[in-house]
Image 1 (cartoon, rainbow, N blue to C red):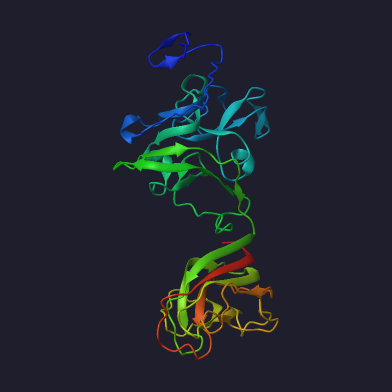
Image 2 (image 1 turned 30 degrees about the horizontal axis):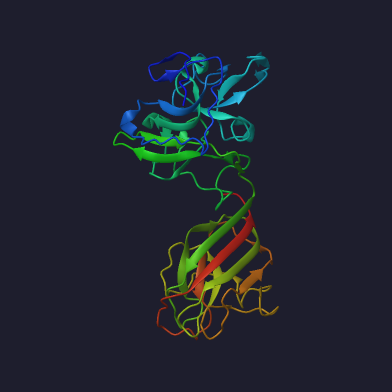
Length: 350
């Protein structure tokens, strides 16, 4: 392969031309990054040196290790026309998609975009001061309201009403490594799409059924990390049998309760049945008549679906989702198998 003889020094290649590389198998780049190899707010990857500095809390400089979005044109603040014309970098804000959801975003590697650069994709060490939440290696991180990287943000694919209506959520990378000071090395690779916080919520959970009881409406399990917000309107509830129980008879239903943490085998507290024989409008794969969800081997209902689109108005308190025993025929021997998929659709605000 011929040498690209255009100003090569200090491990850098400089040229006003774009080098062209032709191979029969493509080009591989291997890296073994370590957080100790990077200074705070330093990065490596696709770096853009372009644009000026937009309006934000520090108008004279970007803040290294924070996220910015590229703005073209002019902007107005308090009736004044600020920074007209040239492209400028503004701090991201998840208040509205135009502030980083639907625009080009990058990570500032210094105070001046044209000198220090903006990382568009690659590895970057984020100092603790520019992180909210707790970094977990391998886990995703998000845009925040003030340019910093946010961990511990609720994934809107499972709870799209978890934030303020009108805000948005966008994954910008993944934690590769962290140190004892709270700094994190992340692989910065912003997704092209984003999720808007809306009134419409959807809960989708895989629920293992490992309890049985002969007492009607006794709790099998409370669905973890799940509730329907107060004053919501539930529009649809559905469940499907993914794995049959090992018990011959195992009838269940889905109920809501304002009580959080009811133990298995205890009666549900003031339950509201939303799917099952006690919930008007419930239909199943086998029948248009109301029926409980059958997990037992005697029913042979593997992959059967139960569905109810009767509107349910939630009270002024958050409601927790429970799977309960239906009827008195389940016996008291706990199951070792049995799994359902549960989906609840609603409109509401957390």
